[in-house]
Amino acid sequence: MADVDPGRQGNRHPSIVPYQPYRTSDGVLAVAAASPALWEKFCVVLGRDDWLADARFCDNGARIRHADELEVQIESVLATGTTEAWLERLRAGGIPAGPINTVREAFIDAAELGLDPVDVFDDGDGEFRSVRSPIRMSATPPMVRRRPPTNDQHGAELRSGLDS
Image (cartoon, rainbow, N blue to C red; front, side, top):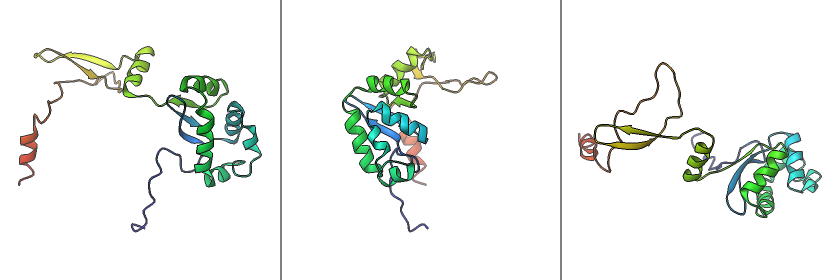
């Protein structure tokens, strides 16, 4: 068993197609058409109901066998519109989908949703900003006790343990 390298699979689901990120004209979105009903809706939203009768894509097993080919075809359709435009259409069609955000976009989206992803702390040396923990517990809320270390601040101490 250890002699078999399964290789990389990326972000594609190994047993459901389509269930992965796809490129659009201006970004990337993730689609999860994980059932026959969602596959049918997905094809309709993309204007490709011909895929429903195509032997390569007519059921999940066939789509798994032709996943690379289907990915190219899906991305050729999605390349005709923006991520936001496709998300509107996919969501309106009942297809689970969401953007793959940059870090900046993730912070903007979180703030727009009222999630306040950044905390401001004062450790006695002045204020600093830190990513807020996503974990919320009433009895033991997460705490930041000190600011993150500067580059190589503890490097000598950490490397000294390697010499032993």
